[in-house]
Length: 396
Image (cartoon, helix red, strand yellow):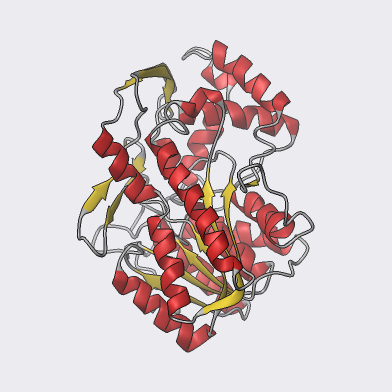
């Protein structure tokens, strides 16, 4: 079939297998061009099919030579429906890993469930023995609690007051004002339940109890802080409350793992184009301005560059003890530089529909959004007939 992008708001409902494979290969080639990392040997990535999770798996496998298990919730092609981008990404990763002689396995299912935790533990025990790095990179709008059965739904809202600021329709380039009503107490509770640290804690507890977590193991989860422009809807909003809970969990896990020489961190990463970030009002316009500034300064990074720097410099390099006052690793340091934020703030004040393509990298944002799904990728013939039914090797 000929696969073209079909969008519904901030969601692309189709994905292109060859485009996704090309994107994964480019990340692998970037890593192959970097110095090798003396780091983890057996890695579990929970939320491994896109974004920072996928990049972490690529770095672990192709820079550190580690065995990996990826857990993710993606769907294969069915009838006229393409597979999800994460499915195609993972198929491409598994194929490349096999060709390079790397050991890797995929577990597809709901990472929040007891079933997938048990299945993953059994796989670790059978194939890898023990895990010495756990990357937690789950991004989901909903979670069903494995014990109570309650289903929680996250929301992206401010807390306390109505919030109004600029936003952009990145398809049309229209800049407008977005107004968001504040969250209720129950919406805050549910967002924390989905995006906070409880499931991360459950994973580490069960891995330890099963005896498949190595002494001295490291675990890391991802967070974001960002500038004052986005604080009301992000860091000081419902998502921020969830990230506070995630960071509190990291402190608790660091004490728990420390008894056997292990470590737990939250890594605060740079703002990037993801399906999740595209859903947050204000954020796409901020990222577009940020990209323009950082590209002009030569300091722009994507997921793969961020994760290589995290592994090579912070988790396993000379700066492995470098954390902020709250114990967080900061690889958002280049984004948050004073000169970068001052220039972004200057552009922000002037941004309108009429000048958005001049004062920001909105076109770059839009292109990266479609590249998440395998579209607008150089070297791919999008008029060619392609088979959407792609198998994943080492799928368990």
